[in-house]
Image (tube, rainbow, N blue to C red):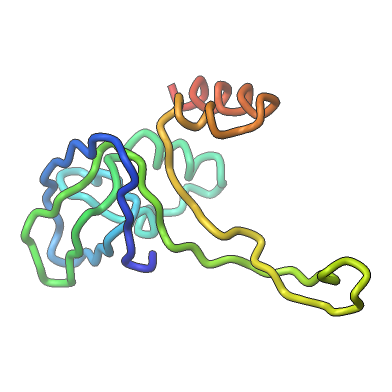
Amino acid sequence: MSDNLRWRYGETNPVMMAVDSGTVIEIGDLLYMATDDARPASAQPDQASETNNQLMFASKFVGVAMQKSRAGDTTPIRVATSGVFEFDAVSNTFEMVWPPGSGRVREFPEIDRVAWFDVDEAKRRVKATQIPLIERLVEALG
C-alpha cells in the first residue's frame, strides 16, 4: 500500500489489535488475524490457488490498518472494522487517439480511484446488471 488512507464516511468502529514484533504494517493495509496478532494480506501464506487464498483471507479478515507498525514495534494498532475508505492505487495505462480524429495519441490510467464500500452502498453505486455479482459474492463469503 502507499501508506495513504482517506476516510470518506461511515463509522470506522476502530479496534486495537496486537502486532508481532517482526510484522511491518502500513496505513491502509488489509489485515487478517493470525493466531493472536494482526498481519497484512501480503504476509498470508500461499494456499496453492487464488480461490483458496481468497477463502482463507476472507475467513480471517479483520479490517483496514489505520496506523503503521514498524519491524520491532509491538504497540497495538488501530484497525477500522467498517466505514468507507479511499486509497491511492497504482494503475496500468492505455493509449488512445484523443481528442477523436485529432491524430494525437495520449496515455490514460485504466483506473483513477479505488474505494471500499459496504454491500448496500456498493449496490447503489454499480450498474443494475452488476448487483447479482455483489449478491453472489456476499453469499460465497457467508
